Image (tube, rainbow, N blue to C red; front, side, top):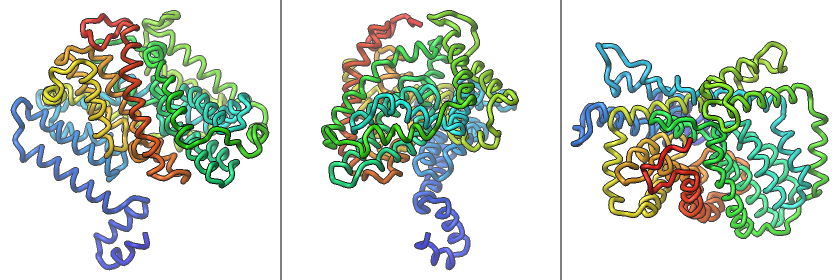
Length: 516
């Protein structure tokens, strides 16, 4: 801020703009460079450059919007939620989705905000907000650590993994869970001293608990990771339906085992074996006892969530019992109505809305709209055709390996996992028939590896939050992360691909019937 003050005083409008950006805690150079680059590329693709052979003008317009949004998301020139809601706006202005009889296709361009996935996530966002108000999130975290008698670094990390699994059901979006866990993790790391081994232990606890554990658990629960919802939306649009909570959890269950491998590596890398927590289990137990007994409102919230969770599990195609045939988003909206029955919970609306991550809600809606536009305009098919040329003739595992590695290279410069999967998933899904692969298994294998972009903290919002604890450096993160990326790639090919085949979705057989 101080560095730009002389510039601000001496350069009128420019200085005023720079000062305001700096006041918002952002890098003015990065923000304005990204903003100008995004709009320059947008207008070049939309109005100046000819469409390449095989791509319609509508597809070219959508490509302009996709690249505009990508640069905005990477540079953070505009808030991610505003970029998200701008996607349908630009689709209208450019007619990326053709108008009919002079009328704009409002239902189509705002489809990301009308599909059931977005309302399911809104319910989860609000449950997470109420949990924070009631401090139930902190109770769950400390309660689990107390029950397993966490006294050393290894037990704390495994306990926090259990916390992540539980919170994955209740708190959507990995960044929201990382933010939820941050005060608990900070409290635990403060119990450690400042010896070299203890400093390394702090790094291990923060990275494993707030990043690796959060992302691994997120893939397992449908609403715990927003890219899940993007892929489910694509599958539903292509008649791969009936993916409810249970089916999704069954599909992704083995990913939980990946934490064993990352923990083995992290323990070895940071040399945490035998490092004790200052005060041991007693210190953590004391923090838990400070919260006092469960309050009635906390029991009520758990009861509401249990009822809605059962309704999620007993929808169309439920292996337990088919109680109804409503989509998950409809059940989510019913859950929101129940949460705000007068007197049921002691939460003011202002407090709930302050803790509801509206920016992520808008980001998700815009990302889902963008995936639909890429498919409808032919852009996804066009890009799939060109990517296909790079892997044609390869075996199924070689093609997937190349795309996984390529995904991690692309992700080095991107912060938003949601934005990355919004662009990647429709292209990968469209590629599957060309490679003779099952579209659902192929899309899951490639897009799930995007979740484990562990090279730089700036690749994942949860890692940015963890980096804010100031316990590790970028170099610390990269040295641990590159091995975990290799673990994730190998895990997808050697564990997940056979697992999908066992469930009836062999990636190498595009004719396999949909098992759900």
